Amino acid sequence: MVKMNFDTAAKYSGIEPGLLEVIKACNSLLRVNFPLHRDNGTTEVIRGYRAQHSHHRLPCKGGIRFSDEVDLQEVEALASLMTYKCAIVDVPYGGAKGGIAIDPKKYSKHELEMITRRYTMELKKYGFIGPGVDVPAPDVGTGAREMSWIKDTYTMLYGMDDVSASACVTGKPLSQGGIQGRTEATGLGLYYATRDFLNDAEFCKQIGITTGVAGKTVIVQGFGNVGSYAAKYFHEHGAKVVGVVEYNGAVWNSNGLDVEALTSHKAKAGTLLGFSGAQRELPGDKAMSLIEEKCDILVPAALEKQINKHNAGRIQAKIITEGANGPTTPKAEEILNAKGAVVLPDMLINAGGVTVSYFEWLKNLQHVRFGRMTRKWEERSKMVVLDQMNILGAKISEKDKKLMMHGPSERDIVYSGLEDTMATAVNETLTTMRVYNVQPRIGAFINALKKIENCYKDAGLTLG
Image 1: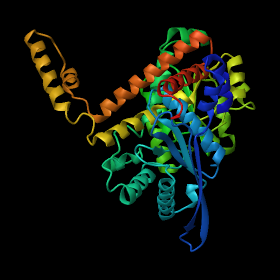
Image 2 (image 1 turned 45 degrees about the vertical axis):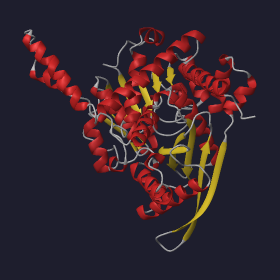
Image 3 (image 1 turned 90 degrees about the vertical axis):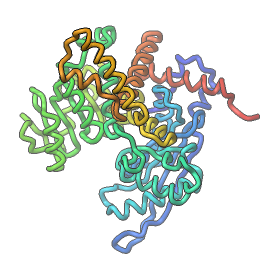
């Protein structure tokens, strides 16, 4: 799928074929096998992988997933997607991806910790982790807990003489050098980018939809970290989240679901089913059919290839905004485009995660949280302005005064940087779409290829 889209974009890029092959090739691949002594006394062989797709910028960057579907081809494809994603949003990394072929639900916390720590040692042994080499992050089946184990293992074994050792991984808990705003970053970035597309009058006119997020109907497929936060921000800004789909059930309300209440219900019940605010619910074997209901925006935020040639013809959404990696196959996108629907591509839409990971990496290298040295100075400066406004007789409410006096917290700065990053990438994509008369995915891909080309041309390809 990634190579098919690459080849389509390459035709518009004007990049010479030899350099295109350099950009496309995966630079380094690692496959390791190591033993796990399980809690029940048995021994099992664990398979782990890491792919570094591109070294045009360093360090490499990409998540680590724990899934029994992981294989070498998958991590190689996802690593290449990371290269293009980072280029689109001007995050100075090469793409990477890693994975361990296990179902984490079948292992105890102790077993998962042993697997994660041993995997970290294997990565270091072969040069696939380090603050200036390769910086992993969470992905499917992993989270802040696993990243904390990676950081601790790396720091204790290899980082005693490296003041920047904690920057070996991102997505960590705050106590381990994490950053405010990382948890919601992908879902929030998805909202920002979708909003910016919808605020473009020409884009909306082409697909026959009114501008703005308010009043739009939304269906979210996948209610994990990305999908739940995407639903939250759409709901908070006036959209109606009418449907939510999970692997074990789906719920619907034509008047809009209470996203906060639904999130609480799922946390307690482990399922969407039984939610009191639903007009209709579907069991697991029928849940996916809900993505075919009429809506303005469909957010596939689960796994790859969820929208394919078999169901694309029944999708009624006008905009498909991809929260997951590769949820729409090329054939499905072709079918959707022929119907007048548009797909906002994963490589742009879900880049909020790597953007805020970049901010966390910078924080770790600087050894100071954002805003620590300037927040109070800014508050005092604003107080002077407010005093002058009072002298001039300006009438300002107490609520507005508090807002104006507030110096930016780390979360405020992260949100600001994320919003600016997504807005710039959306504007660049819209411009390229119009220049070449292409769909958003190809527009974003063209931008990525041209940025990587410039990097290679300015630096040179080899030392020889």
